[in-house]
Image (cartoon, rainbow, N blue to C red; front, side):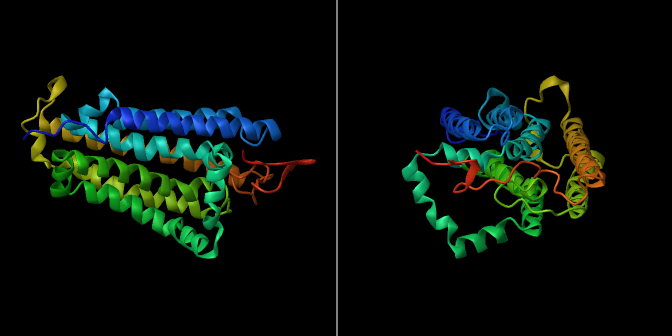
Length: 292
C-alpha cells in the first residue's frame, strides 16, 4: 500500500510557526530576566527551545517521512511529540515568558481568560483524570489499525494525528510539572499517575512485540529500509516505545520521589521551587511586569 507523502500543513509553515513561538518566548524570557533574574533560569529556556526543535524534527524535517516507510519511524515521531518535546516545553515555563513576550494589545485580548467560566473550564481540562484519558485515548485510538491506516493515507488525517499526539502530550505532562499559573502540590499522587500512564503503553508495546503477524498491512509493501522485515519493524517499534516510556517515566518519577523525600522539601511541590509569579504583581522591590 502506498503512503501519502508527508505534507502536514507544509513543513515551511510549521517551521515558521515554531520559529515565531521561539522568538516570542525569548522576548518574554529576556523581559522577565531583566526584572527577576532567577525566575526562569537559562536552562529552562534551553529546554523549551529543544522541545520546539524536537517538534520540528518529528513533523516537518526530512526524518518525518520515515513514518511512512517504517512503523519504527512512526513510533519515533510519536515518542518525540508526547514523551520528549512536551515535558521539555513545560520545563521551560512557557506561559510566563509567552505572556510577557506578547504585544500589549494581544495581551489585553486575553482578558476573557480571567473570567470565572473560562477558569472553571480550564481547571476541568487540566484535571489529571482528563489529561490521563486524553493521552491514553490518543495513543490507543490512533493505533487501531483502521484509524492508523486512515492517518497514513491522508495528509490531513496524518496532520490531525500528529497534532493530537502533541496536544494530549502537553495535557498529560501538565499535572506532573504543574506550570504557572496552577502550581499545585499533588505529592505522591503524581507517582501513581505516572505508573498508571505506563499501562496503556505497556499493553500496546507488548502486543506489537509479541504479536506473530503484521498488525498494520500498509507496511508490508513499503520499501522497508535497513533490511528489516515488516514483522521485525513492528517488534522494534514496540520495543522502542516500551523502553523509552519506561526510562523517561522512571527518571521523572524518581526525580519527584527524591524531592518529596527530601527533609527540606517534603511539603513542597517538586517543580514550584521558583519564586511566585503574577503578571500584575511586583517581581522585586518597586518593579512590576508591564506588557508592551
